[in-house]
Image (tube, rainbow, N blue to C red; front, side, top):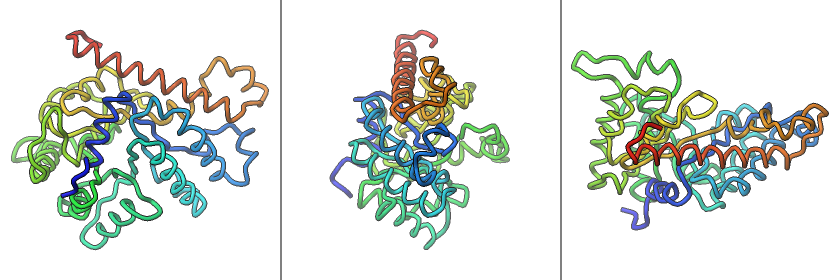
Amino acid sequence: MNAKPHAMARLQASCAERGPLCVGLDTDPSYIPPEILKLYDSPADAVLAYNLALIPAISSNAACFKVQIAYYEAMGLAGLAAYSATLRAARSAGVPVIADVKRGDIADTASAYARAHFGGDFEADIVTLNPYMGFDTLEPFLEYAQKAGKGAFILLRTSNPGMRDIESLELASGGRVLDRVGAGIASIMGRFGNTGDSACAPFGLVVGCTEETDARAIRDAYPGLFFLIPGYGAQGGAARIAATLLDRAGGTVNSSRGILTAWKKDSSLEVRMRSGNLSMDDIVESAARAAFASKADLVGAAKLLKAGKQP
């Protein structure tokens, strides 16, 4: 077993120090004003420039960064080069970095995915995984948790409306599909020893904050598992739901578009937008203000919950 704190424990500590916000660098070229895009040789170059400016501007308010690979794959080889450079820059900021890749395959293929995303050009600290081909697909990633301190978030209850198609289905044996997945992950994490409210396992769960009805039940069912909480901001998830999910071992709340495209709703930039004169500094500063506001919103909701008040 790796003697150093594993990546999920470092993320838990980062959230305690910096607040629960995870900034998603799911950077699409359309999130950048046209007058800035045209200054670069390619959309991938513009995306990378935006990311490299954002990371230091936001890192004091971000517990971690999450980089969604699909946006970079869509830009071809230049996009993957931008993805690699973004990961390096984010890890250099001194906070854990999540590669949002949602891998899930068997045997040698899963091993290749683990090598790809836990080392080399695409190395990250934590990855996202899809468990629906079975728990054996997680084994190569578990090996990296044991030998290299890496981590993973497993899809449990996602933030999209279609989660009801599979994740919420009732099983003939009782409970829902998501309950079976969660119980399986909790059981697997038993090999890493006792965990609880103050110590988390190296694998956590993805639990969206767009559903309030069972947020408390899900949080209490997995007290030692750290949560990645999508859905806040642009997807309509509320800080009060996120606050419930941040209890016990805790979690990190992702916001991507709400921060990356904050300039679009920034009244202080209205004149510059109308005249087509936005600069990179303008949109980065707007994103930094949005990150600060999001962190304050989440921290405030968590404090109200602990005080026994409804956020």
